[in-house]
Image (cartoon, rainbow, N blue to C red; front, top):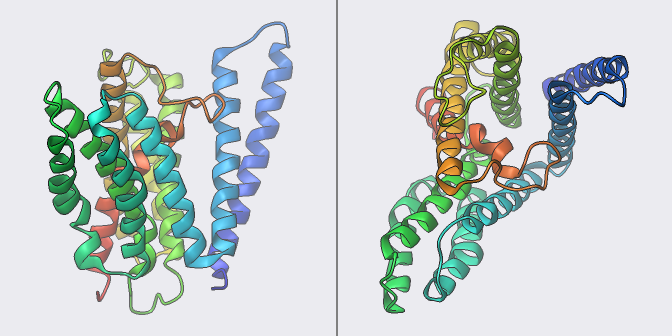
Length: 315
């Protein structure tokens, strides 16, 4: 599958923006000086570095087409679920169900996406996996914290696998006049949602006064939320040319996924606070784990997929 011209144009634009951002960040760092660390600048540098990594991964996946994209998100799901379940309560009785979750349910979900079996991949985890895995744990005879243990495994699959698999599932959509371009929908989703995260951070630092939920995320403010979501929606509208949407439709879709991405981050922050941790992991410097970067995309992906499928796709 050759890369659509629009994708190459977008990727070039992202790289140019990242080069500029890296230059500005290095200048700010030099102005502050090596002996005076600034948490805001350090966080900005870490975010820019994470964006470089995400842009590179998206570009590599595109080189390998549909197979590369599905494999990439399958590996990201595996890493994210490992982070999620590492923080949960488990016993020896859960070993079989965990092994099945990682090595049967996860790859089978992505296989269903690969063969585009929408009727099954849309219900496989929330119906069959949700019912089958507790049976395996129950048969081991361990009842202590049973509901907690089972529920955490189910939600690990729901968030890290089921929701995330809807990103490559966008490649299965058949949109009249948009043949060969569904990869652009993935790029649109990632740019708008991740862009919303960055813009919320910037607006929050510049204008943030009213905290939304100090107990969950002290850095999230109403000013940052409104400024970031609206700016990301305008960004999405400006990218209408790479989608099957009209300009106003691109704005509304961007608004929807940016809001879902924000609440996804809020939900995952609530889980982290419940577990008493700041980050899901430490694999991404300055950003914690994979879930810390993917939470907003994972929550917005199913909504984006079904909106596009219902209103624009023929299957």
